[in-house]
Amino acid sequence: MSVHRTLIVPAAIVDQVRALADQFGPAAQNMWTTPLSASGNIPATHYISAGQIDEIFAELISSPQNLVDISATMGVSVTLDEATFILSQCDVSADEPAEIAMSRIGLKIIQESI
Image 1 (tube, helix red, strand yellow):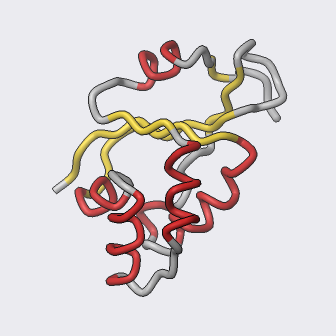
Image 2 (cartoon, rainbow, N blue to C red):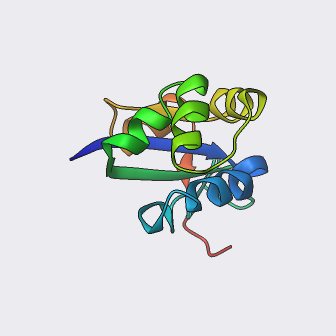
Image 3 (cartoon, helix red, strand yellow):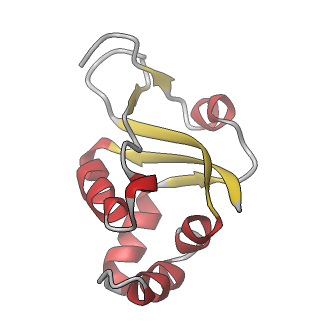
């Protein structure tokens, strides 16, 4: 089963988050490819991914401890410090569509190619 999530990740850690997510299987590949910034112009300050994700992935990102615990059951090593840092930097919304989440934190999609 899947659930909707809007996930906004700072550009400074997007590579780290992508690499971690990729370890959970092909469903996480190609996430966070849409660049965002306050002005809508480059450089990107954040990246967004919005849409349906597996329930297990939603549970995984619901708290730092869940990220650590569920990762361990899937053979992925994440420390509590890493999980706490990553989730504290990211904006995760279960109820907001992408446009509302972006507006709430003052970001726009970059229309120019990066």
